[in-house]
Image (cartoon, rainbow, N blue to C red; front, top):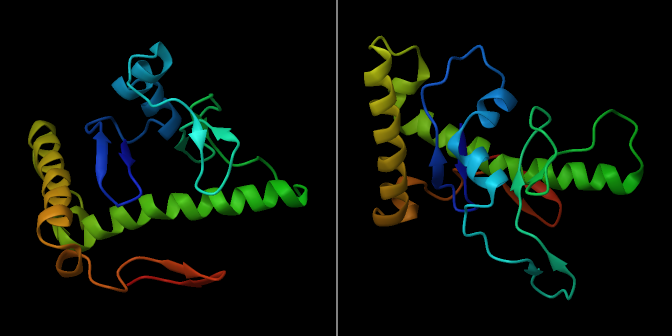
Length: 165
C-alpha cells in the first residue's frame, strides 16, 4: 500500500500485507486509513484551486477497490455514465497515472522488484522500504533529469497523451 504525491514521491507506505488481500482490505487495515478516519492527520483545510473561488477539500485519488469516503475520490462505477461523470473518471484516471508511473520507475530502476524476491518476509519489507526511501532521495537529490530523464513519465499536452518510457 502506498500513497504517492504529484511529484512521484512515496509519502506513505505499508509494506508486508499478504498478496491475497484486496487493495481495499489492505487500506482498511493500514495506519493511514485509521489516522484519516480518526482525524489525526494535519490535513490543511479546503481552499480554492488555482484560478478558482470554490473551496475544495484535499483528497486521495483511489481506484474502484477503495471505499468512498470524504477524503477518498474514486471513479463512478459502471459503464455508460453521463458526460460529466465520464470526464471526472478520465481526470481521476490521469491522476492515478502518477502512481503507476512511480511504481514503474521503481521497477525499472530497482530491477529486483521485477520478480519474486526470495528472502524471508521481514527482509523483503526492509528491502522494499529502503527502495522507496532511495527512490525519494534520488528524485530529490540526484536532480530529477538524471534519475528520471525527460520522457520517463506519461505527459499530456492539450489533450494529447505521450506515453513515457
